[in-house]
Image (tube, rainbow, N blue to C red; front, side):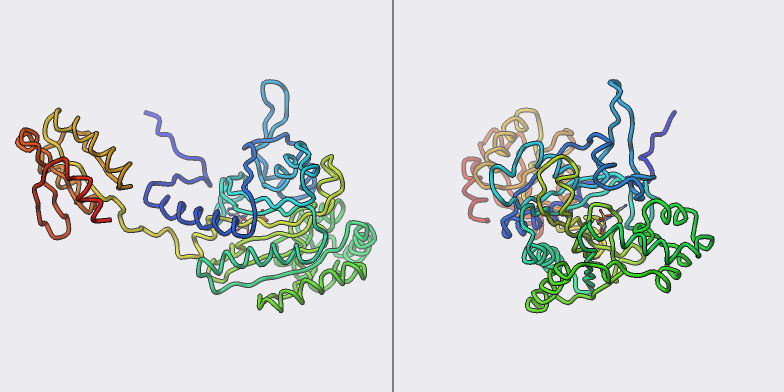
Length: 419
Ligand code: AMP
C-alpha cells in the first residue's frame, strides 16, 4: 500500500496546537483593529509576473524559491511567496486610491517558499502583516514599527532587538550600485557562486548572503548605501529614530540591513529575538514607495511589515497545550435517549454558550464515562433508559464526582447558574 506523506517543509496542525494558533490569531486581529487596520485576504495564487516585477529577478525568492507552474490555459501562476505584492495588486486593481487617501490593511495568511527546511524555516508558513498605503511621512513608518513591537510586547516577548536602516530613494541606487560594484569587483573570485552573479546583476542583494566569507568581504570592503542617501532621506530617518526614542522603543542602526526584496526604498527594519536560535528574525518590513507604480498604479508611498507566525509561536515557547474547554459530555444509552440528547446539546450551545460533545459511537456507559474524563469535560450529563422514562437526567461533576438528579427541563437553568 502506498503511504502518503506531507511535503517536506509543510506541517499538519492538530486541534490542541490549533488552540494556540486561534489564541494568537484572535489577539492579532484585536491589536490590528485597535490601530485602525482592516483585514484583507487575497487569492492563494497570482500571475508569476506580479512577483517577478515586484520582488525582483535576482532575489532568492524569484530565483529559486517560487512554486510556479503553467496551467491548462498556458498561464504562468505562482503560489504566493510573499504577501505585499498581492495586496498592492488588489489595491491597484480596485482603485482603492479613489476611495480614501490612506489605507491601513492587515493580513493573516499562508505563503510558500522552496527554502531548505529547518527549525523556524518551512516551505509553507504563515505570516501576519500590515500595509499602510498613502503616507510618505516618518510618523507612518513609526506607526508600523511600534505596531510590530507592540504585538511582540503583548505576547510577552522580552528578548527583542529592533534593527533599522534607510536605503534611500531609488534615485540614488544606480550611483551607489556602481560604487559598490567598483569596490568589490577585485574580490569577485572570493565570493560564493551566487554572489558572483549578484555582483553582476543586482549587487544590493550581496547583503542577503549568509556565507561567512562573503559577509566578511562586505563588512570590510563594501560602502553602505546609508552613506549615499539624500539629505531629505537622512532627515526622514532621523525623524523616525527621534520618535522611537520618545516612545521608548529601543533600536540599533544597522547599516547593512537592506532586506531581500527589491521593492524596498527608504526605511528598512527587522525585529529579532535571541530566543529563536539561528532563524532569529521575528518580522521584517520597510517602505516601498515605488512598488505601486511598478505594478501599474499611481505613484503612492507605502510602508509595511510581515511577521512569521511559526516564529512567534517558537518565541512564546512553543505550542501550549491549553486546558480543556469542554463543558459537558452527554452520555446516552439507547437511540431514543441519544435523539433527545441532541436537542439538549443544541439548547445548551445556543442558550448557555456551553461547549458540548454528544456521544456518537454508541459505546457502553463505562466507555462513555472514560471518554468524558479523557477529553477533560467539566460535567457529564447521563441519560439512560430509566432517566428517559422518568424525564430525569443525572449530572456528574467530573472533578468532585458528585452527582445530582434533576428533571430534564431544568438542565438549562442548572448550567446557566454555573457560568
Ligand atoms: P520576509 O517575508 O522574508 O521578510 O520574512 C518575514 C518574516 O517571516 C520573517 O521575519 C520570519 O519571521 C518569517 N519567515 C520568513 N521565511 C520563513 C520560512 N521559510 N519559514 C517560517 N517563517 C519564515
